Image (cartoon, one colour):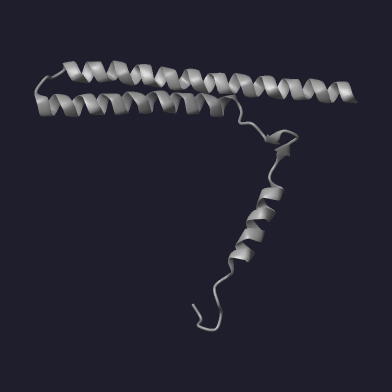
Length: 112
Protein backbone atom coordinates (compact mmCIF):
# COMPACT_ATOMS: atom_id res chain seq x y z
CA UNK A 1 0.00 0.00 0.00
CA UNK A 2 1.37 3.39 -0.86
CA UNK A 3 1.80 5.62 2.17
CA UNK A 4 0.28 8.68 0.42
CA UNK A 5 -3.21 7.25 -0.10
CA UNK A 6 -5.55 7.04 2.93
CA UNK A 7 -7.92 4.08 3.27
CA UNK A 8 -11.43 4.55 1.85
CA UNK A 9 -13.87 6.17 4.24
CA UNK A 10 -16.88 4.44 5.76
CA UNK A 11 -19.16 6.93 4.00
CA UNK A 12 -17.78 5.73 0.66
CA UNK A 13 -18.41 2.12 1.65
CA UNK A 14 -21.94 2.97 2.79
CA UNK A 15 -22.74 4.69 -0.49
CA UNK A 16 -21.44 1.73 -2.50
CA UNK A 17 -23.55 -0.71 -0.43
CA UNK A 18 -26.65 1.43 -0.98
CA UNK A 19 -25.94 1.52 -4.71
CA UNK A 20 -25.74 -2.28 -4.91
CA UNK A 21 -28.93 -2.69 -2.86
CA UNK A 22 -30.78 -0.32 -5.17
CA UNK A 23 -29.75 -2.43 -8.17
CA UNK A 24 -31.15 -5.66 -6.68
CA UNK A 25 -34.45 -7.04 -7.91
CA UNK A 26 -37.32 -6.03 -5.64
CA UNK A 27 -41.01 -6.72 -5.87
CA UNK A 28 -43.64 -4.38 -4.47
CA UNK A 29 -43.66 -6.19 -1.12
CA UNK A 30 -39.89 -6.60 -0.68
CA UNK A 31 -37.13 -8.82 -2.02
CA UNK A 32 -38.10 -11.46 -4.55
CA UNK A 33 -38.96 -14.67 -2.73
CA UNK A 34 -36.82 -17.75 -3.32
CA UNK A 35 -38.19 -20.48 -5.56
CA UNK A 36 -39.37 -23.95 -4.69
CA UNK A 37 -35.97 -25.57 -5.12
CA UNK A 38 -34.40 -23.13 -2.67
CA UNK A 39 -37.06 -23.94 -0.06
CA UNK A 40 -36.63 -27.68 -0.63
CA UNK A 41 -32.86 -27.44 -0.16
CA UNK A 42 -33.32 -25.38 3.00
CA UNK A 43 -35.77 -27.87 4.49
CA UNK A 44 -33.54 -30.80 3.60
CA UNK A 45 -30.51 -29.10 5.12
CA UNK A 46 -32.40 -28.39 8.34
CA UNK A 47 -33.47 -32.02 8.66
CA UNK A 48 -30.01 -33.41 7.95
CA UNK A 49 -28.38 -30.95 10.37
CA UNK A 50 -30.80 -31.88 13.16
CA UNK A 51 -30.08 -35.59 12.61
CA UNK A 52 -26.32 -35.04 12.59
CA UNK A 53 -26.40 -32.96 15.78
CA UNK A 54 -28.68 -35.43 17.56
CA UNK A 55 -26.65 -38.42 16.41
CA UNK A 56 -23.38 -36.73 17.34
CA UNK A 57 -24.54 -35.90 20.85
CA UNK A 58 -25.86 -39.44 21.34
CA UNK A 59 -22.66 -40.99 20.01
CA UNK A 60 -20.45 -38.87 22.27
CA UNK A 61 -22.57 -39.66 25.32
CA UNK A 62 -22.58 -43.37 24.46
CA UNK A 63 -18.82 -43.33 24.06
CA UNK A 64 -18.22 -41.56 27.37
CA UNK A 65 -20.87 -43.43 29.40
CA UNK A 66 -20.53 -46.85 27.77
CA UNK A 67 -24.24 -47.18 27.00
CA UNK A 68 -23.77 -48.03 23.34
CA UNK A 69 -26.16 -47.78 21.26
CA UNK A 70 -29.06 -46.57 23.40
CA UNK A 71 -28.26 -42.87 23.75
CA UNK A 72 -27.38 -42.69 20.06
CA UNK A 73 -30.84 -44.01 19.20
CA UNK A 74 -32.58 -41.72 21.70
CA UNK A 75 -30.80 -38.62 20.45
CA UNK A 76 -31.38 -39.59 16.81
CA UNK A 77 -35.11 -39.67 17.56
CA UNK A 78 -34.84 -36.31 19.35
CA UNK A 79 -32.90 -34.88 16.38
CA UNK A 80 -35.53 -36.21 13.98
CA UNK A 81 -38.30 -34.59 16.04
CA UNK A 82 -36.39 -31.30 16.16
CA UNK A 83 -35.84 -31.41 12.39
CA UNK A 84 -39.52 -32.08 11.74
CA UNK A 85 -40.49 -29.22 14.05
CA UNK A 86 -38.14 -26.88 12.17
CA UNK A 87 -39.59 -28.02 8.85
CA UNK A 88 -43.15 -27.48 10.13
CA UNK A 89 -42.34 -23.96 11.33
CA UNK A 90 -40.63 -23.08 8.06
CA UNK A 91 -43.54 -24.49 6.05
CA UNK A 92 -45.93 -22.32 8.06
CA UNK A 93 -43.80 -19.25 7.26
CA UNK A 94 -43.76 -20.17 3.56
CA UNK A 95 -47.55 -20.60 3.56
CA UNK A 96 -48.09 -17.25 5.30
CA UNK A 97 -45.72 -15.50 2.89
CA UNK A 98 -47.44 -17.05 -0.13
CA UNK A 99 -50.84 -16.04 1.23
CA UNK A 100 -49.67 -12.47 1.80
CA UNK A 101 -48.23 -12.32 -1.73
CA UNK A 102 -51.48 -13.64 -3.22
CA UNK A 103 -53.48 -11.10 -1.23
CA UNK A 104 -51.22 -8.28 -2.42
CA UNK A 105 -51.62 -9.42 -6.03
CA UNK A 106 -55.42 -9.54 -5.66
CA UNK A 107 -55.46 -6.05 -4.13
CA UNK A 108 -53.27 -4.69 -6.94
CA UNK A 109 -55.41 -6.28 -9.66
CA UNK A 110 -58.61 -4.89 -8.15
CA UNK A 111 -57.24 -1.36 -7.82
CA UNK A 112 -56.32 -1.10 -11.52
